[in-house]
Length: 523
Image (cartoon, rainbow, N blue to C red; front, top):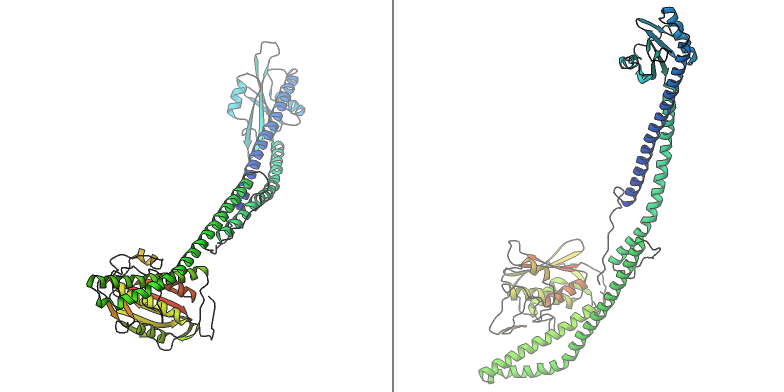
């Protein structure tokens, strides 16, 4: 399993679960406090005003009845003034207005009563249906005005024409309810603070297992299949942690099984390849003898002998490639690195295979690096052989050191190029590119260090002979994969693209430009 690095972005402060929980708690507490305050203020104000107006109405009714019992009708201005003063004295010095037809008397001579006794209240009192009251605002202050008609005491409920209005100041009641509102409003602040603290506590209780689960998930994604979380309690978070652990157990078991199967497959390929080497050596000897005597055989037998020889050589190369791939897979491949002139290595690789006249080279002469010369030769053989076999001339090899600690080797051809889907898979093992890219020959040609055989129709992954021995990839379909593995072993890469004019394929090998005197360096 490939292990990657999981990058954690900056923790969000806005929109995070902790912030949302705190904001929700605070909003709920604030709405609750405001609602409770409004309801308490309304109920308290109603109760205070109700009690005041009931008390005032009863007091006015009783006092007016007591004073009116000894009052002579019709009154004059003086007697009406005394009547108003007596009623006011019994009501705690409230302002009393007494009216009888065109006469009017006020208990306080300079009191302004016109703005406090409304026409609606006068009309209601004049109707003679008993005591009436009304709350009014005068100059920004609240007042309670109670009006009542005076009836004759003969029992027939006839009104005498005398009307009494009592003005009571409600500023004390207003101040009491305002003080209550201020007290409740002041108490809202600690309620909100307490709600925020409780929200933080609740968020910590909820988010702590969530954070642990997130940490374990990131570790699992990074390749640590032994990551687990502790299961505490019996709530939904405990169920989630239990499910995560079960999933991780299943994933770890599957990974172990896959690794075991992969190791068995690698051992199988290596064992089969090793066991095939001995019979293939004998077959190669026989095929070589048959090829040497092919000119003395009938045409059909000669063709068959050459075909057997070509296919036996191809099978031998495939076995060698499989063994090399198995070494890469097992991590047993090692570099035999030494300071190397890369330009000389490229020229030697091309000359050994007889490609000097078929390839244009642009090689920088002063480029030296610590590399494994044999493995670099394999890479060059595969890339150039692939361009010659499947591309179109001219094929150009360019060695450059663009700067820094890297060196590049570019192999370009002018063939049909590679479609995007082929460029993504060109280094896969046994991958076959589109037939438009593949060019094969139907007649056997033979040149210095190179041979093309009839019937050899491979996709990407073909290459020429190795450095002083059978080269990896020639006819096996594994050449490009082996080239990529060799580049990776050096700490480099191979990239594929299209030519500058949009035609042909360009393979670029990039290697680290190490200049030390290291030898025998491990991968």
